[in-house]
Image 1: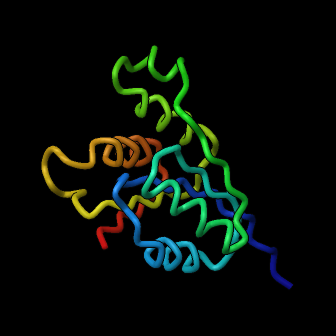
Image 2: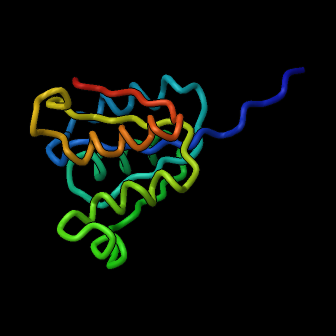
Length: 128
């Protein structure tokens, strides 16, 4: 009898214009186990991720930007939120952004991905 795998902790980030619930469902289902999804407070990716994750049986931890985020990163509170979400103890970052490779686009998504990579956290970028 094998040791059961521990629940996975996934940060989902991406475009505020992302509405492809099938892509999120595909990536979460491919994990082969449930756990916790951590996500932000934007329309698009975060709203869709919350809905799909709950449907699949994941615990969901939605997080919002706060004053400390804006104080640490004036005008870019999303950077503080990205830092705090990753500090929740994440095994994997799933990033959903069709324009991830387009210069000047996906600043928030790219920021979360770069922080994760610097911390040795696995990352998957989904463009479609």
